[in-house]
Length: 448
Image (tube, rainbow, N blue to C red; front, side, top):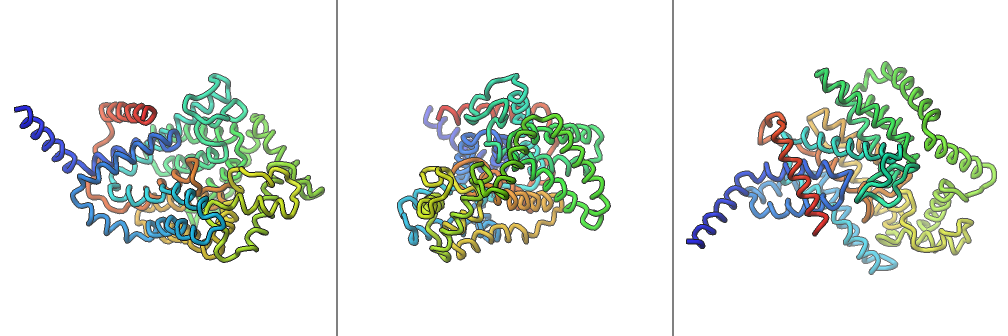
């Protein structure tokens, strides 16, 4: 009797997982989107569930054939594969192989597109915005000394550097993207209550950019606003430009007068730049980036076509710093995380051949035919911000959250199919279920 009951129960569970496979997976992706700017461990647990659900997906191979034809997916997978192939040309094959193994997030787009349905996209992107709202509230708590630290946050969080979950450069990047996402919704929604909510969050998120220590965010804020207006209005862009410039002038003036962190960070930037230009003094964070760039160029000259190998950028630039006796002492010592410029890092590791494969990812995103103009705008905006971000920071590496956030946001904008149809509006009961599921997944991710 017991065996029969178990068999019946398993049969019903299997039928349920098959019948509601797409819905279950998209609900999990909604939760992953919420935790994207908050917790990497929850993202990992969610991806494990998506892999498990593959065993019950009826049309798996048919869907796989469709997804693998996507040029952006091919470009991501090609870059991932290149890391393993280039191990053969590396100056340190063991180091390169260990580095390549940690780039497994490049299969995320393939996995997610096996499930994603356009009907869920608004809910997914809204969950991401809600996650950013939570992060923002905690950031203000740190900045105003209402809280001393955020559990499960990053180690350097403080009132002077109130980035709770992501290092301040990356946090500035995500914040400026969120600001543009909110502005897009503010300009397109016709619902007055929604417009007020988006407007309020837009202003608080904008302010949050300037109470954080990431100068990257200060620059990307202007890029995000102007890029969004250009993408949305195109022919009318120059008509909106004076209003945008006036708004930006007010924002930066307020930031300079009311944000001590902004004053300090911009003051350091000005002083560092003057010292570099007038005295060739590289003893600053800006100077260190200049020095790393100089050493990277020298390392590229040694192996211009195939580079030094995956994960060897730091070793190669450090060796050059020793050889050329760089004035930046710590450049001669390993380890330090990266060389703070994605383009230089790719050239050092993969040479000009690999650099073309790298740029192919951006090119395929740019030329992707997304019929939904709102999604295409989000896609193009993320691409523009990422390309600017790569000038100052290494985006694609084995650690951190920014690489995954970029990959997943782009993946969400690749969806064109709408098989499920229109979803019912989110109710209090549905929101409660999401909340319980999110808390459960968070707890599981921390104890496993």
